[in-house]
Length: 80
Image (tube, rainbow, N blue to C red):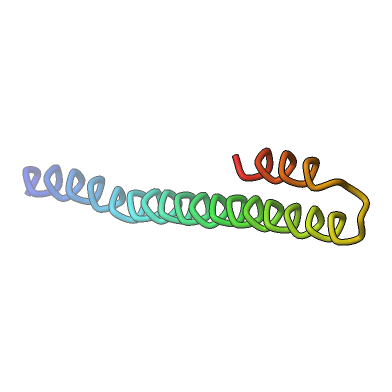
């Protein structure tokens, strides 16, 4: 009987690691998913800002606020 008690105690110790490891894996998965979604939002907003900057530049050129040379130079700078 004594031998079984020792083995059962060891087995219960390992059994408690399963929920802990599950929680760790769950937390890591949530971290990487959030990181991925946050990264996408930043890149998409950067793209939107670039597109908006070009729209503003076109509007300024259309209103005659800047010359063609200024427009071309600024457009090249925004596209790089």
